[in-house]
Image (cartoon, rainbow, N blue to C red; front, top):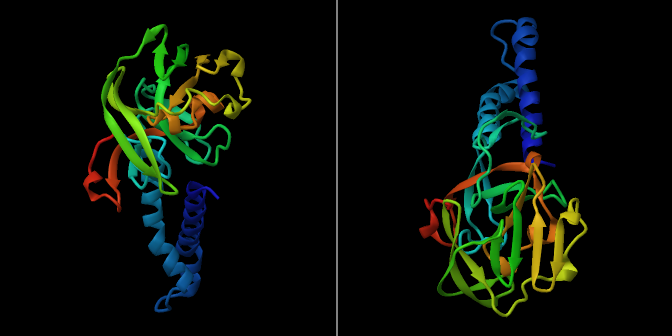
Length: 267
């Protein structure tokens, strides 16, 4: 069950007990008689649950990074904060936008509900905006016919789950106002065609062994992981619709395996 839904149910339950006691049970109970334990607990937890629900639904929400698809920007085990209101105010649970604020920008690191299974939250980088033509060919990214600047940096090695040693090349890429690092593994093909799913809007994309090219539909976004050859992203499952956006990642608040990452901003 979705954690936001659990919080909402607890909020309704504790709030209902508090109101019931205030306007009915307390009068029947009389003075000097102790409150039942379930009333005392409900009255104690209601304000706490209300504050947590409000902050998590409208301001910031914590997430944990479970995979290496965004290395080196995000590491496995990073606990991050996500700005819930930067792209607009949405109703909790149903994610219906009620106030439009900013639109996602190219280069933003964004959390969203995974299109193939909306009960899961994914995090990737915004690469294509509505109306853009995005091409990823031979490990190079082109947007609207303009190849995005990518400067060689250094070798980057990491150990993935299962103690597999991975050797990659780190490159510095610029998307809009965002300068960030991406990883490219020269031993991995540009695209695994067998892993491309059937998705809504696939007719907007063309594929071959060396590239994928997509025209991003209105109201949708094209996402890539920074660990380009170890990321299942829009190349494989398509576009992220606006109504499935959760928010913008902006801060690392904890990593129990690497305390030096605490306090880093996410660019």
